[in-house]
Image (cartoon, rainbow, N blue to C red; front, top):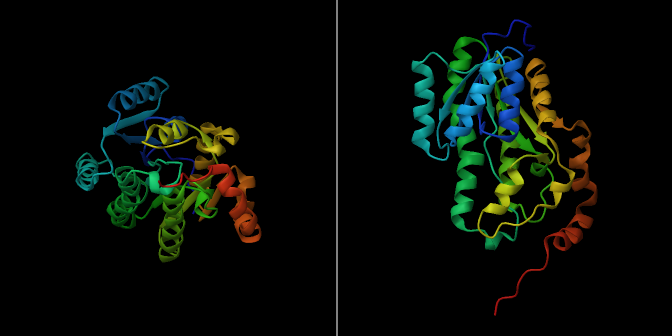
Length: 270
């Protein structure tokens, strides 16, 4: 399925759109004629971004919502339905990470991570999918990570959440073959966003080594646009990371040895 050039009526719902990948993707898609619906918790940032997009000639609306809350997700989709803004494309971008020894993570952080990285994705997809099938068009894009196929030290819960996205995407993609709706996962490498600052901000969170290799969020925005134009099950951004699953397959033993060195020694209990 390939999007036609006349995409001005395509409505894109982007979660986690107040900054980083979500914001850059919203700006880029709006410049290509899409109507973008921005969802996040930070109203001021959303409002400013919508104003910027409109000044540049784009169509944008924002909706303040805490997607870790089930009722907030239901209320969001109900509002979109009432305002005739049900999305043709859903980009499940909202998420956050944490780096450090798993047992030092507070369970509040762990619970929030599961709610945003897993529950919100599954629930929002469930809420919009029937409408997409009824209207005869739809695309769900899950923003994943190479960490889903390459679990590393310090990101036990984060990499597990991205592994969920891989499995969830593959299963839905196969279910929907032959229908007018497709599902994709974009497996990203490290991206220059607030992600790393956020990981440090949570209690006991640490610096993520991959931050040194991060690429600009604009690269992701362009990649997402290509994926919308030419849908497929999996895309790697940047493209050369397609090799990453092979690292786990062929070098698992070496990674087992190197991982603890990167994370640092555990503190012994007295």
